[in-house]
Amino acid sequence: MPQRTGERERCVTGIDGLDTILYGGIPRANTILLTGSCGTGKTSLALEFLIHGALKGESSLFISVTENSEKLLANIIPYMFFDKSLIKSGRLVFIDLPIMYERLGMTKAELDMEEIDLLVAAIAGLAKELGTKRLVVDSITSVCYKLRTSEKIRDFILKLSKALSDLDCTSLLVSEVAAGATSYSMFGVEEAISDGIILMANMERRGDLLRTIQVIKMRGTMHSRAKYVLDLTPVGVLLVPLLKGGSTG
Ligand SMILES: Nc1ncnc2c1ncn2[C@@H]1O[C@H](COP(=O)(O)OP(=O)(O)O)[C@@H](O)[C@H]1O
Ligand SMILES: [Mg+2]
Image (cartoon, rainbow, N blue to C red; front, side):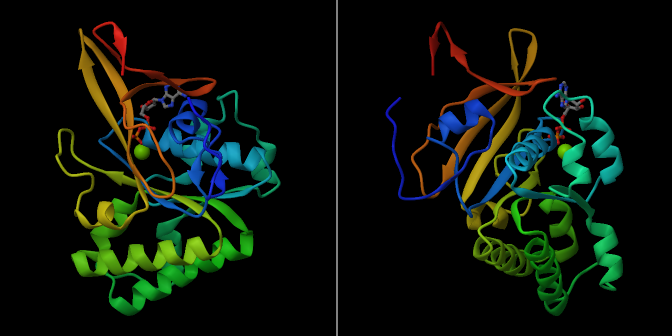
């Protein structure tokens, strides 16, 4: 594969197959939509992205919206690439967004425009304080349910991406879609305004249920658009090209 040295500095994900597809990694400071249906491995991949960053000394932040972060942590401890000292040293930080909502007094089911600004400022403020270089929101879809209108979703994601990009932070926004959905996001807005889209899916093949991953778009770099098979293993996420009738593609 030809090496393309870049106009844009890269955030090396540490997931080998993915870095190869992206010609060296995600262009730094991009905001990426990591999308797919339930069980396709989004949370696992996002966690591994943060762990690799933290291992390299980059401050990494996981903002959990749906799952309790303690439970998440219990799930990753057995993995061989995980090192508990990353948490103790503060290089890998977990925050539960519902706690943040509570602290900000956002108790209503729907956030208004003013509260959106407040929430963006709170997340960006935390990222600034921690010196965050890699951030995950799992999931952005759950936040979108609190915003409800396309206009507010657009406003929130654009403001958040801008604030994080200004901090030179590379972000993965996890998006939940129904299996078989034709859109890359629940509300349709998320996909239009992100710098990149990584799609994860389940695929049945000769009786096996495979997980697949595909980079749909990525601003700032060339990339493969081929579908790869993804394997979740104790040593992390492994990617292999999907074999199509004997040839790779
Ligand atoms: N490293 C791993 N090795 C084996 N199985 C894993 C690993 N990581 C996750 N899994 C399994 O894969 C499933 C889906 O992973 P998850 O990342 O939670 O998907 P999603 O966030 O897309 O719903 C989980 O049920 C989990 O048991
Ligand atoms: Mg998940």
